[in-house]
Figure 1 (cartoon, rainbow, N blue to C red):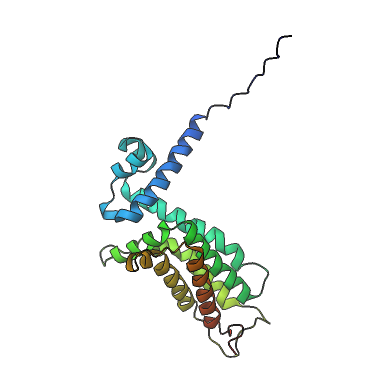
Figure 2 (cartoon, one colour):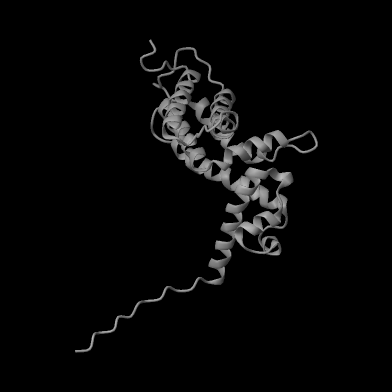
Length: 223
């Protein structure tokens, strides 16, 4: 008895628009890594093209020049961060819990996207009077959201009586600690791995403790 033949369905080939989106995605991913490790000035479109496996001219089809590609990388990173933390900050829980959850999510985000810490440090260090940091307009929605939520508060939140919350101080202290932990410590301390579970857990505890103190809340067990 002859065996019945089995027909294996073939996957549909990607459409032209799908291939274009895949290439655009690959360019952004490669550029994020190149800019993080070389900096804006030293990075070349040829470096990005080589990683993707395309010609330099193909990048220009999607991004007019290096400057536009760089801003697209920063914009996507910061947009992804805002999309991650804004729902947490605007959630239904008490302010302190929302702040702690947002800070923990920020730590997770940098752990998942380690290139972001290097990009932020490079961008700030490379800024000059004649070349303001590109981050200013890109970070404004994040800063404004944090300011709105922290200034708003809610009746019944466990804030110390008479405490004054400075949103800029809270954001800069928390962001600075984690960016330094993720990008600078591996350079300053031999064999330090910020993604090591023990290091990451210790960092999370410390930063959450700092967050509570900045919000005027005593750490559990500190009294």
